[in-house]
Image (cartoon, rainbow, N blue to C red; front, side):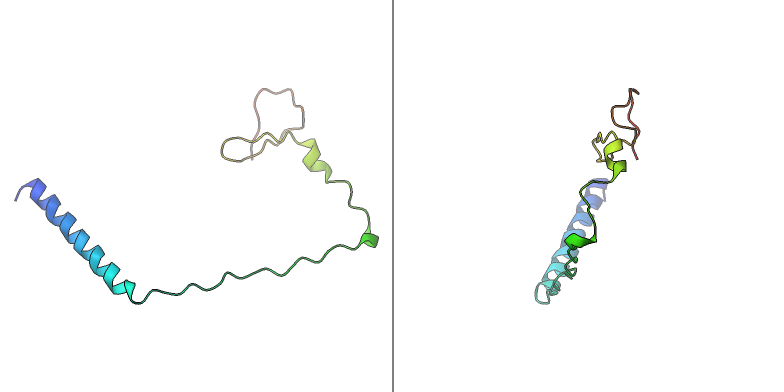
Length: 86
């Protein structure tokens, strides 16, 4: 047999195996369970203290995002040309 005949035979065997697998699982499809739901977070009461000011670390950072979603960890308005991602 030639190389092409071998490839054709392998492709047909793979197709037959996939068809057999699909027909055997079609009748017994597994049922999905509902995703677990986290309990609701308790609301902070007004008397516990003021949380008006966000954390200072978030404001002090540059915050530039690169294409992969990482953020720059240099200080805001840094003079360096490059960003430092983490």
